[in-house]
Length: 58
Image (tube, one colour):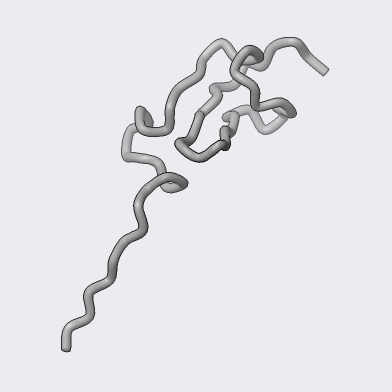
């Protein structure tokens, strides 16, 4: 196990996080140099996006 991950940690509004490094085993902020919130990701976050409401024409 390494003391440092070179991937970027993306923190979601939910109590969840993910790393861009597929070999990362510990998604904790102290192990990452770069930590960003998912709302800062260009294009938005599909994990935390509000559900879309469908409108049906009658």
